[in-house]
Length: 430
Picture 1 (tube, one colour):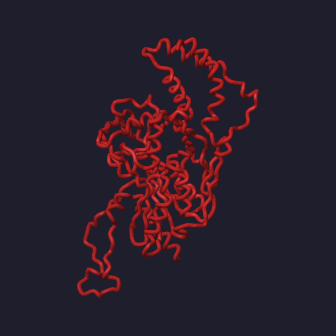
Picture 2 (cartoon, rainbow, N blue to C red):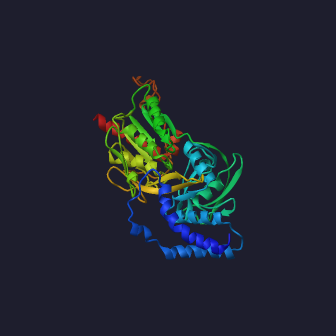
């Protein structure tokens, strides 16, 4: 197609396209009313500049680029400049996003985002190559298999890191506080993200780990709590949301609802009427009176922050750890007629007390930094009554004194959460 024909075609087409695109992108909602005068007040000079840039690329760029690629790149740029989470999704990228929501895909197991124009780790997913290699929240990914990430869109970077299980990928990261980048080689795996894991830390003290929020996470949390309380009621529960990158909004609401019997959980505000939503708790709860501690850190984002903020504002749990990530925006994934998709930020999250999560995050009630517990060795032998020969047998002597588990030694935050739950029980009895 000759460039002059393209130019006249775009001048006629773009005003119509600019008016039509919002309706196609949001078929379920209604746009704010637009008067004929405001509809005609299009930035004609900017459109002409766009056409001029298009024409010069077609004429002078070192390699020939087809019209479709140029227009798709323009759409990617238009979305990419809005915020780090809005993006145009090609068909493969759209399918890949749906796979990750369903909980299974091939890759290294990492949630990433764009921060200050840099590809940044939000959090590694539990028991994946990224987690085992020690990648941490806020690590900046500079290169993927030799390709610099500074010119890639978020979805292009994700596509580079995903691939066939068993294949290797080399990433170069820069960690805060380190002077030089480090290169790590990872072997891709099928990432099956089981989002809920539970166990008893001690008798009657439960541990519930939610690694991300998928469509069935709320149901899995309720089932896990029921299993933990099968033999006897819990005296306390640790809900671990550290390095949880978020996920499905409804799943976050369901998890918070499992612990709340009334009140607001979260609300959203946007420009379109259907972007304004409010979610409240139902009376049905699986653990109404169990003392709770919620663990968060800088890798806790989005849906994880919704749960932590709701339980904190409703005074249902003590939030412990470090400040969360601060991703408080809502993205809608919209299929397009050509098989591609659009991920567009349409609203912001707010906690029940009206706090915006965006760029603020959740501040813990009790700050506990990451660390490791070291047990000090005694400098001398200390005798107790039970060590004396011929001592009288006490009623409880048959029960051995429990030692601090290796896991609690390695995870200082978890150990402090358990200690706080025990203290709450002591005070409750008094």
